[in-house]
Amino acid sequence: MELLERFAAGDLEAFEALFRQHQKEVYAWIVRIVRDSGIAEDLTVETFWRIYKSRSRFLPAGNFRAWARRIATNAALDHLKTARREIELPEDLASAAIADPAVRRETRDRIKQAFFQLPAKYRMVATLALIEEEPYDRIAEAMGISAALVKMRVFRAVRILRKKLNSLVAEVGAK
Amino acid sequence: MTNEENSKEIKALLKAAIDPVKDPELRRDLWPQMLRKLEEQPALVVSVPWFDWALATILSAALVFFPGSIPALLYHL
Image 1 (cartoon, rainbow over the protein chains, first blue to last red):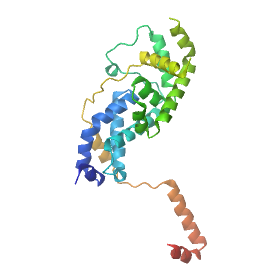
Image 2 (image 1 turned 90 degrees about the vertical axis):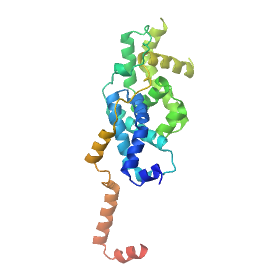
Image 3 (image 1 turned 120 degrees about the vertical axis):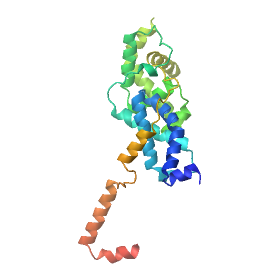
Image 4 (image 1 turned 180 degrees about the vertical axis):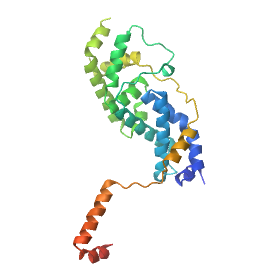
């Protein structure tokens, strides 16, 4: 019996094999959304817990990777909806490149503040599309919505940010 | 300013303030944590949605108050 068939039948060893195959990829996707390694680890486990619980609904001929990513996206979105405080980027996750020095710390803080105040579904698409530069169709597949809707949410997120940062944009643009 | 320009400008500001996560590495195997969760919360517990309970209650009440409907129900099953 194939691995996915054994998993769908409730075989724990098959589940462990799938877990080990996909945990890094699921973690990498989640950490891009929640931007905290500890939370991303917990949500990775939560994702596989949801996967295990709904194993009977998985069709062995289906795409496990895409299914797992969609469940991971939902788990991350649920987290964003409940997490109210601003999440600071840990140093270890930041890229080696230092952000534009022209943008001062105060300005960066204001942008971050505006960003973290976005409603969860807009923050998610803005993170993936604008910061992580993931293609719209990939985001759409992960969220279970159309690419057109992703585009619309990005547009709305930009509009909300624009309102919040209006004075700031003028200030930076004048430099 | 067009929507595209607007979007580009906001994107540039965001990227200057929030760095993308580059090549995130999972530093440890999460399987032991997964096993603990599986042991703590067995997945085979069946949860019944509230509306199923509501339907069952309504049906039970109907059978108690209108016992004449039992043969009709059995006929249709």
